[in-house]
Length: 271
Length: 162
Figure 1 (cartoon, one colour):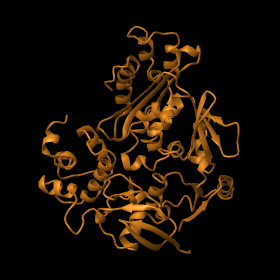
Figure 2: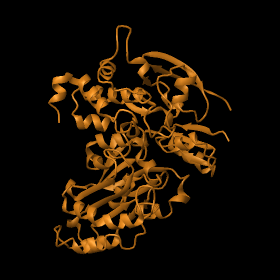
Figure 3: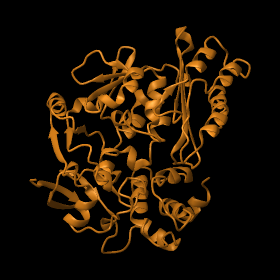
Figure 4: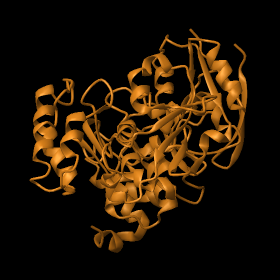
């Protein structure tokens, strides 16, 4: 089945084109979609592209940063306002992938990819679809991701992280510097905002990025030292069902998760 | 299905070709305009053999939609050497035996060129990072890393880098 490519200059035209066909896919940077095209994926027959510059904007929006869905990983790394996310963007593929891969596309990346989405989950991002001013929480977005495949994400809104030390991320891989993650952990430790200010998310510990709710509860009001995080480490994988795949078994993931979580929380940087 | 016209600059020369919907840049380069220097490896953006530069940045041509290069500057290994000789990277690769089967070499060279264009004096760590998306199954990478460092600053500079 040949694929048809349409390019629209305006975002609302692209949104209409996507809405007209259940077999349409929106084109971000192409690093996922072109793989599917090359493999002869028959699940879509239309590719909708959009050159609207609104998709490439990074702007401050009150206490939030709005990142256009078409912003590449390289642009995330190079922009001063999103520089705290550079450690996450830097581990997405090699430099040639980062020149093309977009933050919006990463939201739809299947295992073992999607590390940026893990970070966005920890940050409590809001996903804004084109034409929808309200947006949805990333938790809700991920819960219903499969049914949103032909909706067009316009931007992702994340909080301004004042102290970069409040945001922590690690990718655990057997191959360095580049290798598929057997797990990633992101933590937003906004302890000054009171209850609910701590969010911890895992990647590759389930079918999609997932919050470590038991860890978050255990860290509320706790100090970030060996004693303070002990309870969080005990419940590091509570409620999770890590997969077994080519990179690691479910058992192994459960065993090493507390080790990497500990290093992340104590900031020892060994993970 | 109608073909689409694409005009772009390839290694400094204007090129025009027709592309099919969904066609990737690697096919356009190899079949459309006859530049056989970028290689087909995996077709999934995983191996890096097809690495080219677009507007100065490294891209994987096998997962780049061909029509997106309209009006842009594409560089391949075909444009690296000049009539007067090889590019310093190519010379360094030769001196250090950084190519064995040679299949990854075009991608390695373009990944390295993208690095040196932006950062002429990279550290060893930066070189490793720059070629981290390029797979070589022959050399064990050391000869390639040393070649890039040598091309950047000569043997003396290479020895002084961690």
